[in-house]
Image (tube, rainbow, N blue to C red):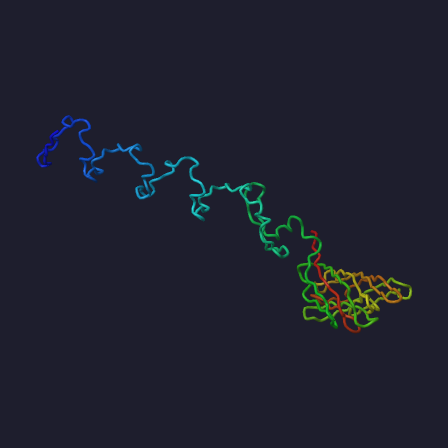
Length: 321
């Protein structure tokens, strides 16, 4: 076969037609490398049969060229996610259910390490309608109630002539409950007394009261005081080993000046565990005779010597209405 060399400059445009070119006459050896450009390729003629497997790389793809329509259903899994790349905008509403929460989402949390406080928050389903809202722990009281008592203060006594508990009576509560636990005195035979005090720490009013001690015959007695400065919770307190006073006292309306309603009632158990085995119960009650002061606290003391040890706690009585 002879080869005729023809210069491109010697061929006019459209001079060679398809009928002049025999089938399969142009072989790949006659095409220079990179001679076929995009302009020489008809639109939409390159199909997947002309692509070598794994030949198309990321540089051959335009930015944002792969859309959801090009992805097979259920083809993208977690191995293709960048850590932390899924944000809340890409999670549809109501898509996180309890089934998607780890079983240890609560049991694995750190314990609060303290008593529940009013400011602590709970998550609630508002009206069981599927709307989650926060609620302060203080709101629980409106549903279940606060209970009868709310603790205001407490103190552990270590040797002192008198124990002053101030600012425990206020406008928050009308009535109060006070507990005394194992009050031990230094001097045998002294009386345990309670003095209401005003905001300046003064006890300016007088009181009338009556008490009764029930024990062994030689220690059974009753006493009354008109216009006394203090309430006697226990007479002849013992100071031997194992001897102490425990009891409680109700104070009604102590924070209102000029009210004849301020009164107290108390009950206590006096442990005389000496050779005679003396034990007894005391009851008492009284009210202010003048009540010109609004009381804000009280002093607990012995008529002689110190209080060596014990604990005192004050509770506000919640109004059931």
